[in-house]
Length: 308
Image (cartoon, rainbow, N blue to C red):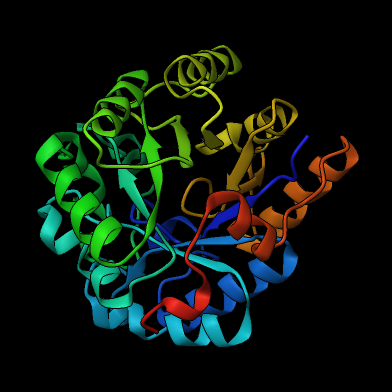
């Protein structure tokens, strides 16, 4: 069985400062928690940015550059920059941070979907920042746009001009077929890296039956020319990660995907989640991949060819 890659998604664009004091909401916090997560065993750091004054999700390339050089200087981890950091802006603005940084990897969402976290708003009576409640409740009207045209722009710009490889985020089984269509048109080349995103309202539910179905579908479509990982959003994070690793897949943890370390207990940091996931994996016999091993498995260009 190949070694298991742990990805850590440090902050994301779903959770807000009121929901957890551990959530990184400025450049210093993002850098510190990313470095700690890498030291705990994360080979890949999946990164979003936050506005330095409000903690709101940001797709301003300058906000990424506030922490990217420090992470590179203090870790050997693979940097993966999101191209999906906003639910309300177009693909040109969303991929601007990756265009500026030219990282080894970028996330790429493989289809449009209803993407909402509005039920979370009912859990809180008071908010730290004025923007938070409207941001969370307003997601009830969100359509997360990722058209074939959008996918093609990212493939041409970041895959072609910058040599980035992609974390192909598949929120439902149809997104796997979208990717196969794009591969048949020559937009992506193997080896590809799939991320089964499970548990987001609007996407496929996070359970083992659906995980097996996604894997079986990927096998039919891509044969042995892919690597894969799973996000179990919310309470299924550790459970689905453990099962995926037993099936030969990789895992993603982090405060972007879940704020908790166990049911009802908030995580103290991203590194705490990485440490727990690593312990589970090693106890069941999985070996953890280093950044260099992950680079070789995924066919990445190398950390010496980025722009930060």
